[in-house]
Length: 400
Image 1 (cartoon, helix red, strand yellow):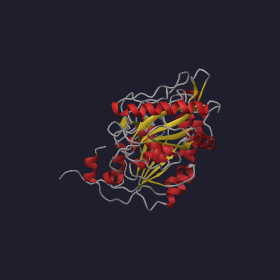
Image 2 (tube, helix red, strand yellow):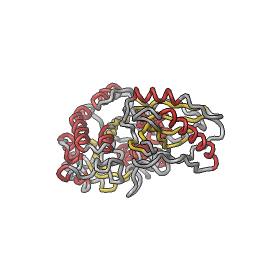
Image 3 (cartoon, one colour):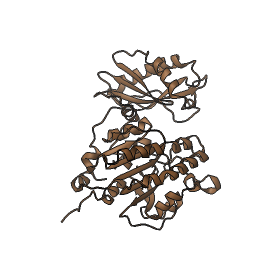
Image 4 (tube, helix red, strand yellow):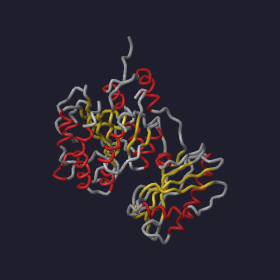
């Protein structure tokens, strides 16, 4: 999305925009040759598709597998190549940790390693948040010379690591090998300024290994997404909207906060999130609703669980439409095929509906049907926001 142009064209409107993100929505054929979205019973989504526009979007570029941060930034209208941030910052903002200038933050995973130090489970069996909290208490006892160390629970196996002090650089490579059967990577300084940071991280990891050695399944940690907080234009500045995020997982709350969204407290289910949206409907122009568990099911290789998540969303869709939004966008931030157990580069299905849209011929919301949709098979995800603003009457005419 062209920020300068959108800033120039923005105008007041009275219609609400809802962006419903089913994390990891896209997939590959599984049951009977269908993707999870195609296999799911989705009469409400199909009806909305019949009255709207469909297509497949790409967050970054053809063949590029997006992380969750870039995937969401693209949906919010930000070019994910220009606006890059490490996952550590998103984790910090998501748990309301106030990053100071120069702080270096990293996203941590408790993991399981075998006696040879090879990773056998990158998520330590998705340990409970309560167990995570007890382990973080132990890691806070680590001492690193010349810096303050912060270790904070995020959710389940995830935690936040922050280093605060002089002379730190965030250009440090991940220690997560992103696959099992390999040993954690050494933190590599990618700039001269980050050399001291990498050394401190190595000390942290050495001490963490000793502290966690007898704590199965969480007997080691992996770190990724080292970053310091950037300064970016907000959605209010660029688009002129009051935006709110309704998400349970801290990472997604963090990326929303980074672009200036208000964070609304809500329960974990979509029904509870829709109740929250209804309570705040008159206070905001743009609502971001996040549904996480389809992505988790894909990463766990559980095709049927992913189908079930999609069907639950479909059953709640009438409650969303009862709010009378002007624009509804239903999509994912990336594809997470159960057969791959990880994010993939495959374009993501997108359903776009508004009171003013010109419907295409798609009658079912699924990957193959979306190939022939009016948005096209490779729609740039950052352009969705501009399209939503226009359909909500929030963009004026360009030129005389």
